[in-house]
Image (cartoon, rainbow over all chains, first blue to last red; front, side, top):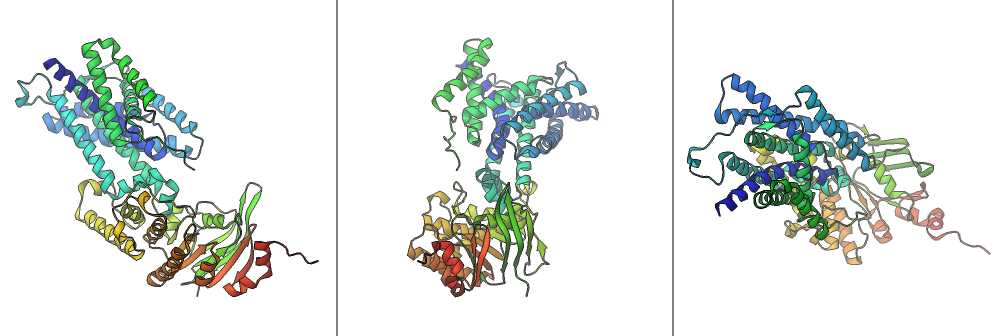
Length: 299
Length: 262
């Protein structure tokens, strides 16, 4: 039973990170029907920024929670700026082009950012400091670590805030309106460009949160982590039903658990086999994803 | 006095097809003006030009808002046109189906409010006051069209006639000085059309609006509009009071075809 719980919380942690990244994919898809393949790179850049910020701040004598918080905030701001800029450079000029063009542009942006970090930083794995302190009350708990607990709680809080934001604020309402009918939203005076920018900023900020937390738990990063995490999170978003926010979270968790239990009970070699096998399985029986609605073609 | 909307020599080409040719049209303050014509005459294209969805190939479109200087709106984007005080509804209903009735109207308050992401996160008193103002204003608009009982229903659950009225309430919430209605009576029964007739006149009087409408229902057009423009194959073939237009041989010809004289 203890082993089961260990795997359960391990999967929950993993799934939370997938969920944080998947939210960015799903929000962007919901608004402009684009798979932002560069989104995984935002997560990676978030992790690198946090590493640089944390190293610099540690030299100034900061430590503990304040160090995590401050380097986290720096990573969020920096990643959000990247997300905003990527949209302006790579997607906005192509908004009226056929659907394949922005997709190719997204893949190009992803490769560009990977190589930019590779050249500007290094191709080696860098060790990432454990920014999340051990809680004293967690000393005797073996099934879940402090870092995992922080990741799960942060994800839950972030998702709750995002849901409230979309439901109850002026910008959230505008986002839903733009997602349903861009032209009509424009005719009601909504500045669609600004809404799209806000979507990229929010999605990127969430990815950065994921990047900082998971790197601090795993302890090492390199330029390639964004690609793998991006593919997994994209899988999670599709699994849950792309375009749906609860779907992204559910998809992330389901994927996390699948991987965790497959690794724990069968073999770690089959982690990806089970993850993508699940995707194929779900898409056969529910092509729109777990929470996705089968969409009829717009007239 | 300057007309609130002054369109001069408006031309719109789609490739080799001339959809509108040299259209002149004025709407004066407080007027209800109708734009009629057979199907495919270019009426909706005309609306699309004015509201910034299409950029016209030639001509000028000038607005005179009541409290601001005159403005040329040829190259403005739709959201800027709306901000300058024009609002429109569509021939086929375009509500945000998955949002509530109140939310639909609140989206239209977007351009008259300011709070952004930071305001939403920190929830200052200013943001809260603004949110309350949005709710109050939107509720008032819904009362005007008699939908105050449906505020929390999803837009897609409303009966057809109510959806049409919601579109009008939503357009009104952008605080326009000129309201463009594209076939507001389409699909309505005679009783609903009579109610709409009263509603349009009432909001014009209460909100100090001018109204330009496209309509096929001749009874509605004749009873509420002060002036009528008739469009056929992208050209303005007649203009004048309802009586003048009804007697114009060009109009009869456009609608009924040539008469045969043996």
